[in-house]
Image (cartoon, rainbow, N blue to C red):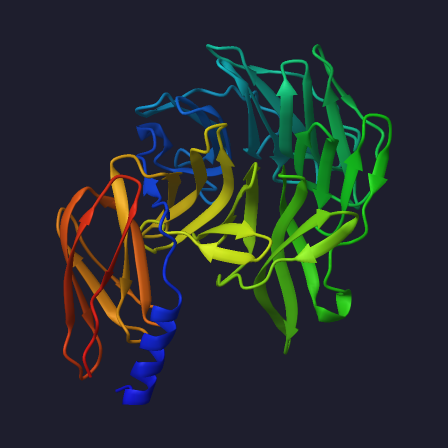
Length: 438
């Protein structure tokens, strides 16, 4: 049982940080039926009715733990539809995935990835162009050679004749940059900063990131930026995402802090402005950040433990997402209007399936509950029923709730429950107090 002082401290902390009035609730949309065994690694949005999610799947053939087929699905504004992605047999036993997507405009998109030989180090790059009706395989270079690795991990595009894809080739892995000139992909000469995991484009040029460094192409040459802080003595960095917005370059990833014989994993975000890096503080996530998107002043990052964060120069705020569970988010995007999407993998009894979040939620909203009791058990009863645990400050939030009226009950060991009610609106967060009495 918690003491009265602990309860009061939790209440004061909870009440001292009121939620933002314009807070947005994330919702979920059902994946296409044929994606029931798929994992999603990339997402791109051209408009509210033109969104692509890509990844891979295994139809149930051994080895079942390996993604063997390419997968893509399209959101038309009302539902997701699977679109076949052709993959010719390349190796006797092979794995394959689409790692990223870029939406150019109505009826036009790119998807990139790789196919791997499960019996050796060999792999080949893959690129596909959506022509409005089908995914068309487009030849790509493999500078690492036939017996070494060649991978594409990210793609970005400004127009039909201007696209960039990045990844790695050879062993040890070297930076690989490919440029689409409107008719073919070609290797672009660039510095080697290791395997490239992310790329973004804006009017200032092309930006690409490896796990530890960032470089910029200004239209004539590449320039390598100083390494993002912190220094190596405070732990290693593994960058995962990069985005440009409002005059800043944002990077996100994971900080690995040595701990006994292993590491502690902490979320990491920083921005580059006026020739210097600034680290974003106060990111309350249990693991690293996996991707970032910027649309003007709006910056959002997804995390590998299923959370989504709103970033700004002053810190980070966790947004209201669907009920917690075994979800790993791998990618995030937003269209020009700010409608956001994040995709990844949900594990149902150990079986992977697509996880697709959108904000504001379509036909769904969320609640934020002040319980005044750290770790309180929160139950909501309405169109759906569920439970969750408040954080140490006594705050709890959940999105993805169908619209309607809910009764909310907060319980703490040995205390009287707090009971309140809420009406959930579309894409919005309803704040309420259900204070546990001890």
